[in-house]
Image (cartoon, rainbow, N blue to C red; front, top):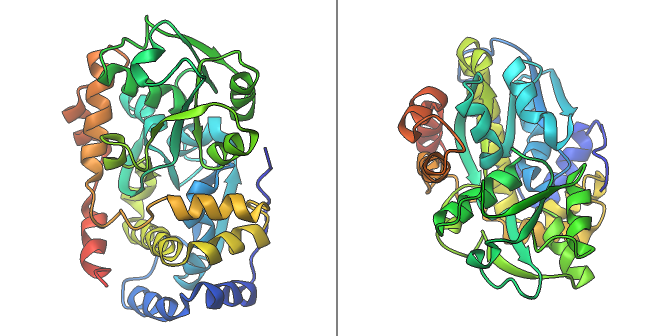
Length: 340
């Protein structure tokens, strides 16, 4: 698994890349809208990053954030395990993160607020030869990164949806990292594995397993966001203008990914976020980054929370979870502002 580089992207480099992406025209409009609003309450923004290029809008948003007046844009390389904890304890301000991985933290009452959905389709569930559908996982072994991580939570939601109790009717085997979990599947020590971002492409190159569920294509999973934008609640409450600017930058960057996935993949490759251009291109092409306008993120949270609540994996009802841990007001404003 590659390591996230801590690279500073110069304005010249970014504009050169943006020219390739064909998005320079939006930057002037973006800056004009931002300049017409009240000044930022803070010029520092800390985004939580994990080694997954499905969160590409966070990378591409950096210069948009600087154009908005953020003079200190930090990307915290905390890995896949620590992101929600960093949001909750205030080390991070905002992040794109997988929805299933956030739900246990919301259930625990952590001070995290969901602001918007971004895209669907990160995940593909792979099975060995004898596993042809989710129902075939009853009594089988599933490789995950660790209990409570997004892969564990999403597979649990899938199992509950087909009437299998994830707490009693499957065996979970955990690796020390996402890469280790995939290796367990490759080695034949697990019957199924949920790959995300680059991993499905890597498994296809290895000719290991077959896809049981493609969350970019298969209903009902394709109807729901896999990645949302979340913020530390205190940061969002104390800095509503800065929060709006940050969310707008991420959503505009998502539009860039949707408009020209090839150039977005080249951008990621040039900056070494994913040096394997063809893998990055496959991910950019298959993920629907334009979904944030049409789909309802509240439906995503309600759907998964209900499954998990029914099997006792969370204690908070879906409606209470929505009431205490979401705020869609900025998203509603941006949907009107960014209709074009």
